[in-house]
Length: 517
Image (cartoon, rainbow, N blue to C red):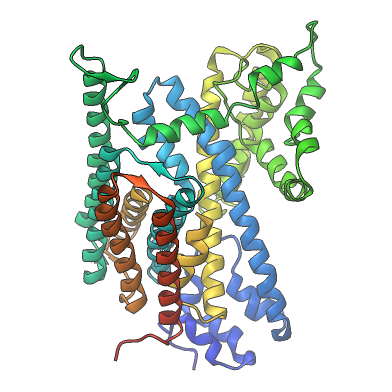
């Protein structure tokens, strides 16, 4: 019964509880997903069958924790370090917004897509997540903002972004129709993203030349030209988010007389993620959520350095930054490719983790002896690069764990990977995510296997996803210009109703109520 290794892992729920463990162990499809833990074996082999509901509940709580780790790593470590790198390289907001900051904003989506495309039977997670996230952003996010506070979008950037997004969706239509992704299609994704970046840079350059031209007409003290690039706001928001508090408010708490903090006090204060002033002003709900996140934030602070160019000392914390030179390489070794190299021995004798630890200890000792607590060294900006690498490795590892966990939930709950992607994975997370995530994920897979990436046959739910995203983009492309690029509350309500209708149709399709005859 269990000889064939080509059996689909989804069939395990059709067996009796006593036969499921043997099926999971003998079926190749059940052991292909990367991750630190084999969740299918955990559910069907290690724990008694009568505890399966409790196990699934605990796994869903663990999934929530993984999403929190993804969000914390991306927002508090990955994005600030990318901002510091772009500031050090003196990139403009336009270039940084569509390159470094776009990667930082979409890092969880990109790495989740790469992890999902690593195996054919989880590729549906990536397709569902990218399409689901696209629909969610273009309807719920845009509609929610318009409902709360109507606004006017910049006409040229809006039309540019929608056109490129529709091109990316159409490119995905063709791939889903063929069922395979070859090297040409993969390079096409990355090339389209490169063209998009070049278009943004060139349009910003033309705008700046026209803005500073003496022939530019000025009305009401501002140029009549539209806002150059929508990504400028992303960069400004990200830069402002790294500034801690109001400068005038911070000035009131600056000591009148200079004093020198001890090294131990600096270390302890650096590992405290709670702002006491904000804690006193916040509600009990915020305090409860913050208390639950504190252990995760402390662990991340121990492992990932953060350089903040907006602070006077650039977030230089001498004892903690020296400790980062020890912990950061260890985290990279222990989490890279889901811990594949954690126990690897060089020539069967020397562990890789020790090879990472010894240079880190030496560099930490040198940094500690040659620097001071109150003044960052000239090479402090290099820690931003270290923080970027560690954050990327950690996000990739957590994303692989999320994909592995979702695959298990899909098997146990008899849900397809596509519907899990369009709901759970999409809600936990647009042009850059789709092009970069699919393109890079498939490119890595092609180089690993030297074969085209095979996709599951596109079912009705996949086409519902693709069609809904395409329809939402076409409606925005037509309706928004007719409304003179003003998103009113009525249009916001329309977008929310559109998403509710889409989600209803998608779920009815998943459960077989809507089907092809």
